[in-house]
Every structure is written in structure tokens, then in C-alpha cells.
Amino acid sequence: MRQTPDPGSLGLAFENVTYGDGLQAWYVAGEAGRPVIVVVHGYGGNRTATVEVGPPLHRLGYGLLFVDLGYVSGARRYGGGQREADEVADAVRWVDETRHVPAVLLSFSGGAFASLAAVARGARPAAIVADSGFVGFRSVVAFRAHVPRVVTGLLPVLYPFVSGGGHAIDVARELGDRPFGVPAFVIQGTGDRTIPPADGPRLARLTGGRLWLLPGVAHTKAFDADRAEYVHRVDEFVRSVVAVG
Image (cartoon, rainbow, N blue to C red; front, side, top):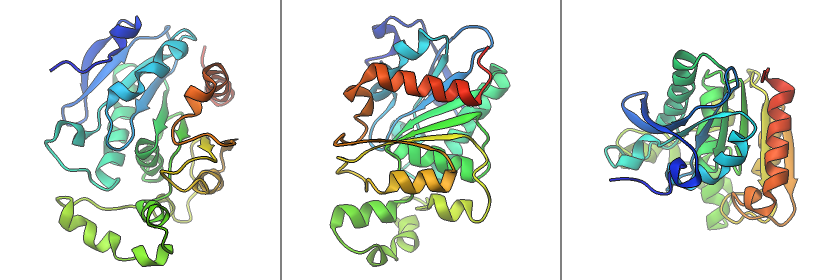
């Protein structure tokens, strides 16, 4: 079944590709030598939710890889971040091995969490932009349930039993005492009611990255709040840390 909207519906020529263990993605070629931006959707969504960021970035010369994480097909359950982090690493590897240009992650919500965890576990994109990400599901559950984080202590223990062996990981725990090692740009709205807004500044500290804090902006709504400014900031960040030709 065709997923819509797809890049073609927004005027972008694309091809269907697979990465990792047969996972589906849309690839849009950019200018020769330019980085490919790997766009990672949030929990409960799929690649159709991210295509609108494509045209303005493509006009700047970037290639684009819109991925579906493994649970989208229904063949496997959501893995708590561990499986998804490995899949993000597979997408970065696909760019490295097939396009031979830098891969930049642009990821949203649960996709940002998975992307940050992928780097913490050893993936090496050229840079990462994390929009409305979070440190771990324990902080999200505590925030949504209005309970202290300590109450969620059994979540990592119980999660494998309900996820087919997945693990509810934590970016800080995965990173440990090691430096993050990849230039990071963290975007967070203070009006977020889906994940704790305080996780944005915390992620900026963990990654040693830049922080763009948007007053009153809701979860993953920074792009819609000011599209031109969003694209400008992402482009300026990427150009400051990656050779873009």
C-alpha cells in the first residue's frame, strides 16, 4: 500500500530503498557531495509525518533519507529504544556505504531519542539535530503520570516482557562517562506537554550541544512555528560542523 504524503506529492523526485534488515525508506538525491539528512519520525508515526521538512532542505542542496523504523510495518513491536537505536545506526551506515557523503540525523520525539541513543551506543553520523527528544521513557512516564521518576524504577525490568525482548534504554546510561562525540543541536519547545521540556536542556548538557529553546511551542511544532527560521538554524548548524561543499 502506498504511504502518503510521500516526497513526490511535494514535488521531490525520490526512489524507494531499503536499509538495515529490509526496512523501508524514501531517498531524495541532493547536490553532488552534499550531506544526506536522515529524517527519523517519532513514536507512533511513520515517514509520512516528516516529509514536509524535505522541500526547503532540498532547495539548499541536501539529500534526504526518510526512514520507517521497524515497528511501523507491524512485523515487530516497539523495542523501547534499543532496537530503534540500532535501526537509526543502520540508516547512517546506508548513507555512508551507498552515497559516500556525510550523514546528518534530523529526528523527532521518539526518533530523536532513538537517534541520540544510537550515537551514545557508537553510531557516528556527521551531526545530529534532535527535535523534542527525551532522555528515556522513565522520564516521559513520570512526566505524563505526574509522579516522581523513582516510581518508574521497575519499567526497565518489566519492559522486555511486553515488547518481545526490547529494552527501555536511557541516553545518559548508554553514554556513561564517555563524551557524546557528535555535534548536536537540540530543539525544544517550552509548551511541550508530551515529554518533559526540561529534557531539552538536559540533552544539550549531555551532548555538549547547542540548544534552541522555543517559548510556548508544543511538541514537535518548532518547524510549524517558523519554518524559515527552523530551516535557517538547521542549515547554519550543519554548515558550521560539516563540510557541505
